Length: 98
Image (cartoon, rainbow, N blue to C red; front, side, top):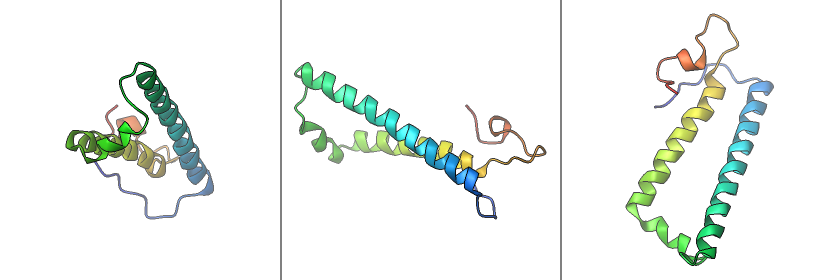
């Protein structure tokens, strides 16, 4: 689902919120990936350079695309949400099922 952005440019607070959300998600994802890689390497399941060979796998690409779509939907909420009390809350807005 693509969220439509407002017609006006976002304010500095909204942009800062987006940047901090991106940084937080990047840190969490990186930490999880590194932990998984280390565990798999320690268990002898994979070698460090083996992960690079998965980029050509269709199942891997589909999962990556689905994860990207989900992440972008969540990030676009930050840009599309409104401080106007007449606007529905994010969870109540159409298409933003939790």
